[in-house]
Length: 149
Ligand code: SF4
Image (cartoon, rainbow, N blue to C red; front, side, top):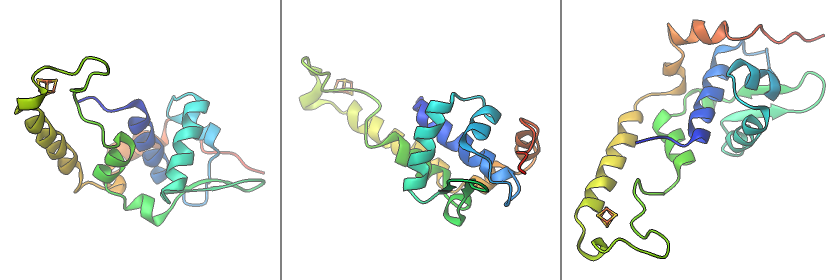
């Protein structure tokens, strides 16, 4: 199963924010540079993370991004579910030409179960778990800490 790019970006943003100092509050651009993602993609993902209460974004001088407590303790499985949505791994309806096996297919249900098992395997892991050594120290080396005056 391949994740949507936005799902991976959301997890990268959360991991980056989980490693910076709590008072660092990097900007979206600084986070985008650190995780090697285009700024425009990052802004969309950050907006969705903010909407879900996982990231706090403050504007203006001294503002920036920070992880909320809900973001720090968020289950990786929940984040993946949220960004992947309800879509199935195979498009049985296929637009104008639905699969002819559809009325009697047993594979579809099996694939749905496999998809849920995939998500469930990520449920016990939290964002904080993802930044323990060696990932956390490496994430900190990706870009210099934001310099503020
Ligand atoms: S064989 Fe089954 S799972 Fe595959 S596209 Fe057809 S209905 Fe869907």
